[in-house]
Length: 408
Image (tube, rainbow, N blue to C red):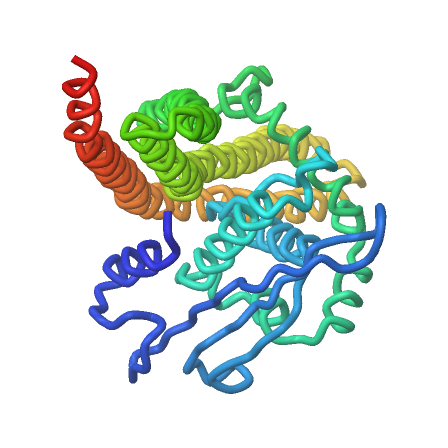
């Protein structure tokens, strides 16, 4: 989906009729990820991007700021938000391509640039995430400061981007067990939440299937375009051998085939960027939701186990008080501390539940819009292509019929 469509929808959801990119008295924050450039050599090479921020928010350094960022910087931002904003669906990042020969292809670079643009704008337009200090750091500091921020991470966040992506995949592989309650004996029992979990798992499966066939459709257009190009060249050579009206008709037929080949290749690219990639983005988005569900399952389990432990500590404290044990004081301190910890754990779990309830509404609204736009782009592109193909072949009919009549 085009970024303009995303921004338009986000503006609609916020109730504003003013575009985030236009001058306005309303607060706005928009970001453009542009101008990908290859830097370095060999295995050390990477792609950098110009990240342009436009805003009228007073906490930012002026109306426009331009910084250079690389993929690992986007991962840093994603990781920080995922760690700090439990219960919020952190927008997904595009995968790190492990196939070296495709890593610097023009098509792959553009797909990643578009995905990174959508990623950071979803954060910038989110009511909670847009206030993140980490987002401000990402959008404003120079490259040296950004590199220091990455290098100062500890624990899991100190790992390299490739390591983190593997960790994220490992987390994803455990999500099903955590979310579906296979980690016995503690699991959340809530009919509405069970319904949501089933919906999310079915949605992921259906989106993945649609995405798979979307990429097949892209491949088919590319292959047909190449076949038409090859056919056009062969027919033009055949026409050159004839040297008469038939040869001229063949030559024009070859030229039309080559022209249609270009249109098919162009439509294949449009299909990829405006249909297949948006579907793939939503597969990633569902995986982000599942990661949040795993966090919710962990929070529920933690507060439940603390509640059970507090009950046992309370029973033990009562016994000690009955026998007037000299351990009562120590037990009381331990009980109070544990109770405070339990209350904090319960608050954390309830906050995650509240945020998830808000997030799923936002997700549904955005998904309805984005997927609708993607399918509209598919239908529009296919209709235009079909008309152009029909017009091209139709324009040849009189000349080919004339050649056929002349022969008879």
